[in-house]
Length: 319
Ligand code: AMP
Ligand code: MG
Figure 1 (cartoon, rainbow, N blue to C red):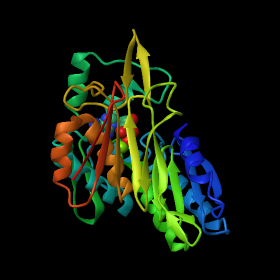
Figure 2 (cartoon, rainbow, N blue to C red; figure 1 turned 135 degrees about the horizontal axis):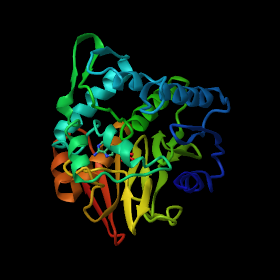
Figure 3 (cartoon, protein in one colour; figure 1 turned 180 degrees about the horizontal axis):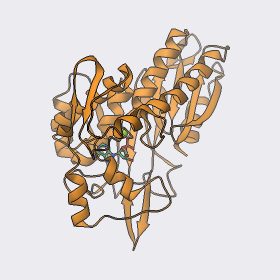
Figure 4 (spheres, rainbow, N blue to C red; figure 1 turned 135 degrees about the vertical axis):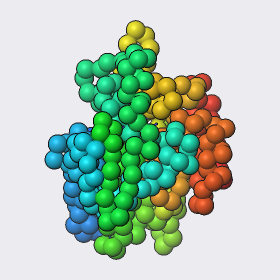
């Protein structure tokens, strides 16, 4: 979908830049590395290998993952890897900055909806209240020496942040292998290394933001120029199911336990770090335009947020 769209945009016309592309399936999505300036494919293969390894850290559903073990800890402290600890720490930080709109403890609730599964259920108000009482950043505490304490019954879901974290590590890995011009695409979560070579110089990569409508998401609504930046989109068209004519999408409002409803169809965030872009696209989707502006004003790095509403009207804000 967005993947092929983006690649057609970035690989099509430059005579001087003939990239090679390595594709794999991981993180429940298509993962692709496109390298422009190195003929040796080993770097891209290493980055894809890392991506598959990282799944064993951050997956909520894989019984062999580190996160799964943390979620099964029944309230006992668990010592986790530096990677998991670092991501949890940043997520909790954004939870606070977003006034709880970004919340990695909604795992029990999102598992009931089962957006990625085949059997969906909509929890009623009473069940939602019960599930929400097990959520909230205060249910997790981080201690010395990578110790993590998660309350019994609290299920951590890093689905809104892990792809960004992993993309940043893949970028570091590629750079350490001397790659200077590349695109990492984790199912539409895009991160660039440098720009696209054009003769002796380079030009920005152009990444597409999809029309956020089911069945039309292979159409480009607008493009964003990226040089060393990431572009991540959260949208109602990405994971959802329909029941009784209502679309239930996967971005949940922690206040209600229901899919966030504020007239938005997608929110894209462009900034240097893919981890931040991933977290912020989810957070800003829940917050809506006004409160998102307050959130990004608090950040000490440049961010652009692109809102697309149900009428496909576009609003762009930056800090
Ligand atoms: P994204 O596609 O990055 O916006 O992430 C959405 C995924 O994050 C969902 O499929 C859930 O697993 C999880 N999620 C849903 N709502 C929230 C929220 N308010 N804060 C953090 N994670 C969420
Ligand atoms: Mg996200």
